[in-house]
Image (cartoon, rainbow, N blue to C red; front, side, top):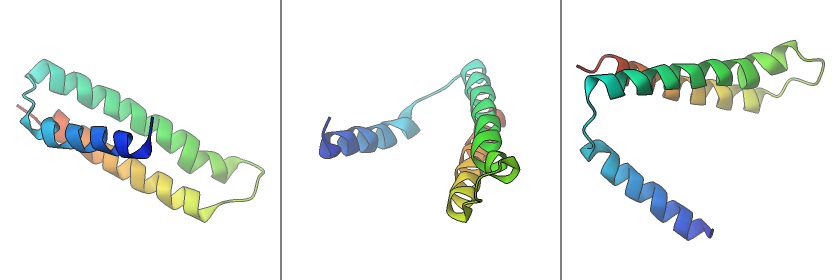
Length: 82
């Protein structure tokens, strides 16, 4: 898959995603899955390097925190949906 093809698919999804309608059950399922993903990201990318014996990489830690907060925000957004 070429980079252009991949980017086209991502931008198409971003344009279509706001038009999608989810019922309450679907929003709850999405939020549960996103909360689970944030737990995994927190454990692997953020907390893992702190407790490991290897050298601490600040860039990886900051990127992991950023991804954690973005996905956590999405999970909260879907969780509060009616």
